[in-house]
Length: 116
Image (tube, rainbow, N blue to C red; front, side, top):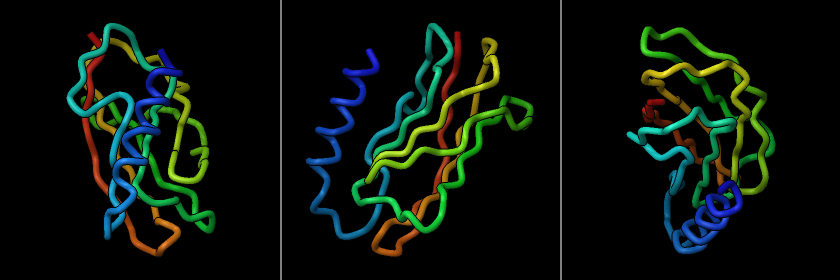
């Protein structure tokens, strides 16, 4: 399942590489997803390479706004991954992210997902 998600992210990133401005093109889990089980990682694909000068800022919080434990972001060109270290119980979660592209543009946003 992880291999399929990564392959999908690669296809989406390659399709979006002609974009003029940095943007996020895919996440796993997807925004508004309802998952049968908690994800072990949160993956991001951007349309441009992420800067190696600054680590992305990523947070995971629960429905009451409490930040949960995740790993330091791992960057591989236009992909960013964090490992989820907290146990996620059923409920809603918010992911916020902020990265700088190698071209110097900032990309920030948030999305939610739920664990059933």
